[in-house]
Amino acid sequence: MATISLGFGRQNFRLFKRSFLLLKLIAVVFAVLLFCEFLIYYLVIFRCNWPELKTPAYDGEQETLEPVLKAMFLADTHLLGEVRGHWLDKLRREWQMERAFQTALWWLQPEVVFILGDIFDEGKWSSSQAWADDVERFQKMFRHPRHVQLKVVVGNHDIGFHYQMSTYRIKRFEKVFNPERLFSWKGINFVMVNSVALEGDGCNICSEAEAELIEISHKLNCSREELHSSQCGDGQPLPRSAPVLLQHFPLYRRSDANCTGEDAAPPEERGTLFKERYDVLSREASQKVWQHTGC
Image 1 (cartoon, rainbow, N blue to C red):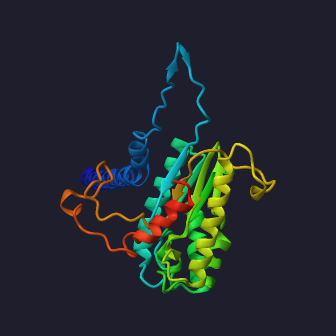
Image 2: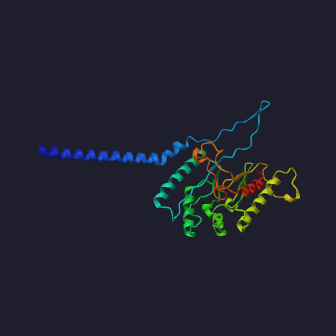
Image 3: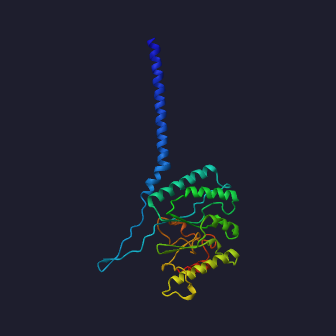
């Protein structure tokens, strides 16, 4: 009887030991997932902060600074679509983007967030239903409090390159994202340009984009006049500040040879020449943008 009892006790001990090891393994896996999929974003983004603004002093008195605007800039989120996006790849990418954005939003508390184009990867060919699904996922990932403004600039993957874009795709995009081209906050003017339409070939969409630039130029010029002329009308004048130009395609430059900093291309790639109307705007389009935005 004692032998049977002893054997039964050993068996229970083995089962307990196995259960304990299994619980330890589950706890370790859970801790790793918690750290790698949640806590790591806080540890990384906690190292980021807004630059410190120093107040210059004149004759022993500090100069009164203008109100500070906290703005976050993002670009090329490329939410995968139904054609080229595998569900597991989408799940992984979008979880990472959502956690990074929500953590940065919580920690840095920006007042406005700008996304500079290519929000979606397949907006240039997606069906109405696929577009609606992509928009729904975007709004979930980049949800934000009401006091934070989200401003989006169109990119070529959202409406297609110049010869792919259509009025339908542009209107579809603008129905979701505010189509305003001129935005002012805390004394700063932001000009948001549809750079895909700056081909300069006189197409209807391109002509409309250039007309919008001319109208913005007129408003900016009026804001710099001491006495408003009759041509400026009676509308609310804009702040007298140089505008911040926001667009998807960069202005023309030959290469990244003169670019430095943390976000610069690797040294071996900086000499690669850019293709006009593909990698960057053309010289002519860039000149028009400079001319009509008061830069």
